[in-house]
Amino acid sequence: MSDRDLRKSEQIPSGGPLRLGAFVFAVSFGSPFVLVPLVIASDLPPEWKTTLSGFFAIGLPELGMFTAVAIMGKPGFEMVTRRLLATLERFLPADPVARCAIASGW
Image (tube, rainbow, N blue to C red; front, side, top):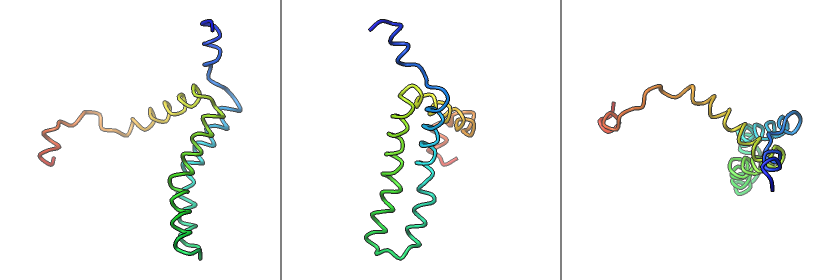
């Protein structure tokens, strides 16, 4: 495979696939916040509630992430996660906290 073919295969998708993949990614990670309370409030037996809540909290986000990667491709998924992490980094403290400060309980 030549360098040109390699660069072509690693291009970040634009338009539809990127938006659809980002939507699937967001919905799959946000859905437990809606679905788990609905299951808990239902009249299902406790065994079903436990199983469904576990699937909605752990399994559904994982399946959504794999589906998003399949839709966007690996470069597109890495771009979305990079942007998401860059956005979240703004909320971190500016200076690193020293280990002695953590150990002393500051």
